[in-house]
Length: 339
Image (cartoon, rainbow, N blue to C red; front, side, top):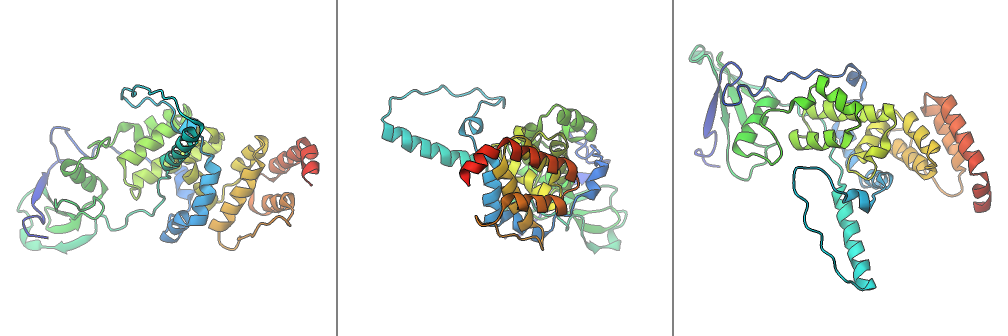
């Protein structure tokens, strides 16, 4: 890396860094009070999310539907002209296999990673330049090919403190020099709590989550706030079907599992005849939470397993036990034939 590339430019931040947009960092987000009760995302927990057994379980629970994965969506672009072809049975089967692969890629899950901790870290304090200027100076390395996450961005304060840039400063500098399509320089006001709540109440979960993935880095505190608040609303309203067959259902279920909130999803599965999903979620839950690893095989009574899980891990025991009993009654004939 040459000195010409390193710290090649700086910006003066005065009164919130005013320029054509008036202010880059004038949006104040208020956190939902219930967010403080969420379990902290650690490196160990993030590694569990990326583990192959956990990813396989999350993918099975997503229930990828090709029709939903490739449905028309209002994204501000004109749809392409449909193409009609005459194909043989072999060609159709080959095309279907390719579509299934593309559908799996389309529901690739956003990562769950820890918050970045080195932001704002003080590097040096030079008292000799105190009072040199009343503005902040921001220096950035604009070498081509460096990822936005690794790019060096530092700030010199008027009191002589040299520190690493905070989240908003890093976002602004990266978006100015290396703008990403769909990402705005100023964070959209829709992510403010007052504007986010109506969207949640309207069930626009996929829109919120897609835009959060576009606007924020996954280790950004605002990303965690918006995404986890959305997951919490989906869970409380039991609207899991809205995110089914999308890339967001897997992370949602992982969030419920690591925060030990299985009740609503299990109740939803039992009430909608999704017995296999109950077993899959219990497997996911036990793999994430230490000391609960359970090996499931055909010789074990799955109903007894669910009863024990409800008894030890769930809060809403009465409703879950009643739902399990109702499911057993409704499907008694089918279950007796299978046995």
